[in-house]
Length: 196
Image (cartoon, rainbow, N blue to C red; front, top):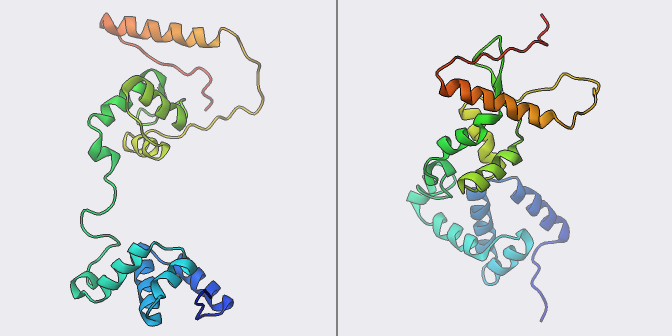
């Protein structure tokens, strides 16, 4: 059986380029218009040419004959789409702050500037391991922004070598910080390498 091909390959290519430039709602409605124009077999043909789901084409056809649907703003119907992790994961902010608490530093010159030395992937992995919360690095980005963490940029141009006890040094500092805080003593962080 011969495949129906009402348009030339050049026109099909133009249709595909135009389709890719549209948003979700516009795509299904454009596909619907093209399918309706072709009549019998139009849905299958447009499905093949544009690579869209047949169900989306049918939905677009239904929307074209529904004035209420055509006047709706936005790409999806109200309530459509996946809910944000902030809506579905209870205690996400608190868990995030617990995970980065021991890996946070700030500017001695401006207390509003703070950062973490953990990467986005490390934060996501620690949330999964320590809190049982699985999120993407995109959500980690949003958490960092919501809590005003800045990306720290290293200014060091030349490596000064590594010390096998470097991590022990930071662990010791953290132990001292917690013991002083538990005793109600103040803790001051001083960056002695700051240049004015």
